[in-house]
Image (tube, rainbow, N blue to C red; front, side, top):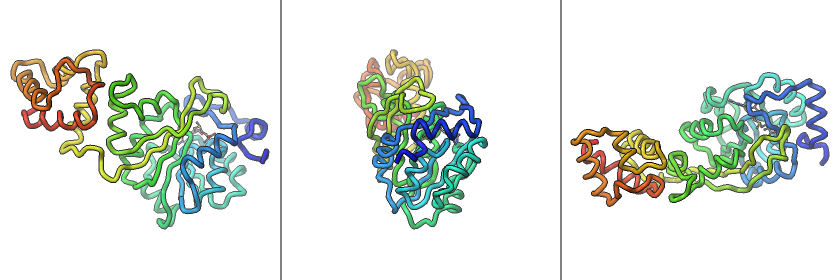
Length: 292
Ligand code: SAM
């Protein structure tokens, strides 16, 4: 088992032989702890019934474990310098396809149709490049693909925001935007020492599964998102302060805001972090009903 790619010695050997130099701006921190990789695959409950998309395989540390458990793996890597390395490290795994591309730009549905047979569950498992964790998550949630599960490693701070509940400092528009559509759970945390080079933050593995129906139904998603973002724009200020910044400070607007807040029994002096997701949805409808 010390033949795994993700051991410090084998990783070092592969990187040296290929003369590879890390690019910090691509979030290149490679896992070198096989135990952590085993636990990621377990957290994603990856089995023969699953086709898996991996974002950013690096030199194949996680890809190898996925290949051993999944039906097929499609690994999407932005850095062309890693393609020859992966060609070598993935040679023993005929069920792995490596494709060069940017997760935020590729056409995922057609890529899925091209590489998978449609008879298996579709999962995403990845150790994400941390510089674009949030854009990737929002992209995956908005992509018209029914993933059975998304199991991703990210910086612990972002995991805390994703799973945050009202009344906590981490609760905000990211928590609400994601929890509205997904059930989010932290599986376990990982020390920065499990990577080369070690990032300057600790990490967490997060499981996201799509809710059968959204936590709240909103009639105008864009208006809801705008309300939530606007409500948290100045966290320390009151809802009233944030809402007048968002909608306007004239008397007519203030009257409508007052009426909308009263109709859902939310105090203008409340702070956004005290409102639950259903309360934000009610407020969005009340604002609309009052012509805002
Ligand atoms: N999976 C490997 C591991 O666990 O050791 C590497 C993980 S490393 C944190 C992130 C990887 O994502 C790097 O290989 C990086 O080149 C790649 N990457 C960065 N931005 C990307 C993007 N927009 N699309 C696809 N891959 C990307």
